Length: 337
Image (cartoon, rainbow, N blue to C red; front, side):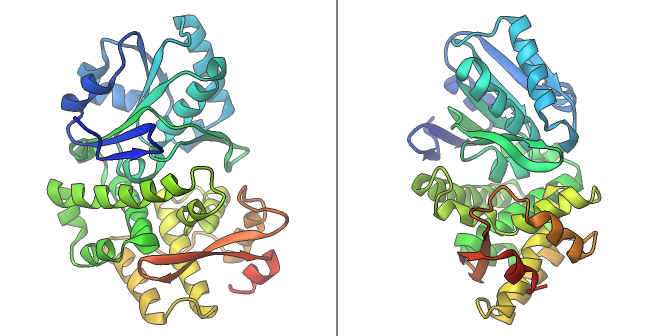
């Protein structure tokens, strides 16, 4: 089976049933799985023939301590440079496992089976692997492409409603960045339809991945266009640091709406397009009220890892399907709120 996308000619992205794809993409030789207890329980028949390293659940395990635990388990299991690491799980599993694999013995090959919507359309695609440091998002990490990513929309049926909705924030983000047609299709559907119609969901997943894959193809290491993929994330990361009330997707939805409002104030985005963004996220069931005062969020923004030479790199929507990256001082950014 040929991949639907091939990022940087090194990372094949497959969309379809994992049971039909996995055996054809795994290399010969030993495979060690990194996953979590929930995935191990749900998909044990798929994983039972492999040695498995299980990590904990939730954003709190996305740390160097977890990576060190994986290293120790790799040593215990005799993992060497010929071993292939297969990460099976959501974005936290793939972020942590990808970082561990890309640094263990200076790098072993790895691939992903992504089991969440957020992971399929964002976290597992593009070669970013990393962990948080003292609550600050992805402060330690690598740019290393997985050998493959398998995105099976059927796996998403087991997701809790809140996790599924969180992934839709990244789909909407991708549409705002570079796919006005996808945005229009989301406007014309419903949360329930996306949740239950596998064909409709597969279309949304494929379109969102295409946006990211096309950008990463041009700019793997975030020196230019790839910064656009951070739409909504400057404030989303601040929300996640300042409050534990929202998951990543929920924070991205709030961050996207806040930055859309800022873009209107700057004259970069029409009020009509801003309203469309607010309306589509509201219709999908997001609470768009920041969990803490924006002043508190601005204190965290200055510590974002994407700041360079004292300047923020703010991604502004300038239309549905288009955005730009604008350097901005912290004071100028704060004045927009």
